[in-house]
Image (cartoon, rainbow, N blue to C red; front, side, top):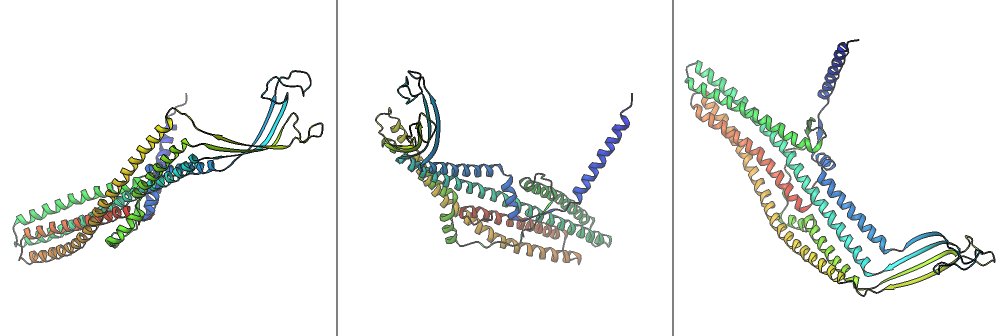
Length: 441
């Protein structure tokens, strides 16, 4: 029996080589450049809730198209052969069933039918409103997804800024530890200062490690939304330092009234409910059905009969069905649609109130975050200058280590707060833009 051990070893070695090659190719692959617009586009193609909202909008539009086709005349080319037992041998003998005309009967006709009634028109308007409401809900889903993408996108910037700040503070702590050790060797400071400087280095190293973990987490959160492999390396191309201007309050309010999807969805839902009430009431009225047929209805499948008579001909009919009694089904449908209309009206009122409150809150948040961002910029500048001066004073023997430590902590807080403040403004602006419609697509 031939041993399979060498074969297994060869396959294992080959598999290891392939994995090494794949890993090298992945390592060598350049990072993908992602702008905010590209991130939104990628997230839209992968988000299931957004896809479901889009499907609902397309289905509603198809239903509207179907309702429109029901208002138009329908054309059917009808072909039929009837065989009926006759009372005698000849094919032209009378038939036993009074509903049929001959033993052999051929029907080949084009038929045009049109139904005239109020229900069809009301349902056509209802589906139009429902399609508009579904499209508005799709827009709500799109804007909600955009807000999530913006939060994760600038969350990566926020984490990167904190990581850079943690690295700078660690470098500063190492530099200060070197100064302290030199001063201790010269007998200028006590050993306690060196211990305190070492503790600062250790603290800054822990902060740097935490910042790296937070940065990886932020990148993975965004990568899940953009790539099939969340660990794909990428770079962000949109600047974190260029802040869009905040429009005036009047511009925001005008845009919100014109473009808010929640408000539009509520209005279209109310309009659909009103048409549903109308359609229910039209069930009390008769429908007129018009029919015109042209073709053959004869014992022979031919244009002319054996005696030369022409089989081609036409017929027309008009039917008026008058509803008389349906055991109060129509009344129940009217009551049901009226209740739905009242509910839709209530939802519209609530949506209007929520829009006013959300608009005020979102605008105040954006305005305050922008003001805070300007103050944080000044804080970073002041803290940087304070640390520089405090370090110089300590190096010249005029200051103590506590002042330097306090300046370092102040700078860390200022830089961290500045990164959070920038992300806060972008998120506030995105939340405000969900109400106004001025968002990237």
